[in-house]
Image (tube, rainbow, N blue to C red):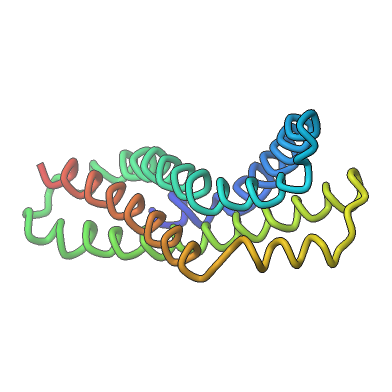
Length: 168
């Protein structure tokens, strides 16, 4: 079930993250260029993606994909007692979803940043040094910790929702 709810999603998540990063990069750069603020587009992209966009996307997809994956296994649970169901299925799924959510966050964040770099370097001809200096100045450890905690909270909500549904 964990394979179907998270690990199988790595390649599609990386592709979606890359497409999202490229379209957001071009749109935000073009929007801010009218006000001569195109140099700030990198900072805006990194903040929005790291803190808000990636954790919400992971939480939503994990919830939907996990519930679809668990629906297949529901018939096997019918002969188990409630305590056995919690010990055998629900608790491992909760910890597995937290771990998968964290790994998906790392993969999506790296894909997002690499794609932003590629777009700004090759499309907008921004120097590599400028990109790295803006990245190091705009993203702090506190923001990454907050974003990882958001992802873990959304993953916990997904796993608790599934656990409650199948415990009933």
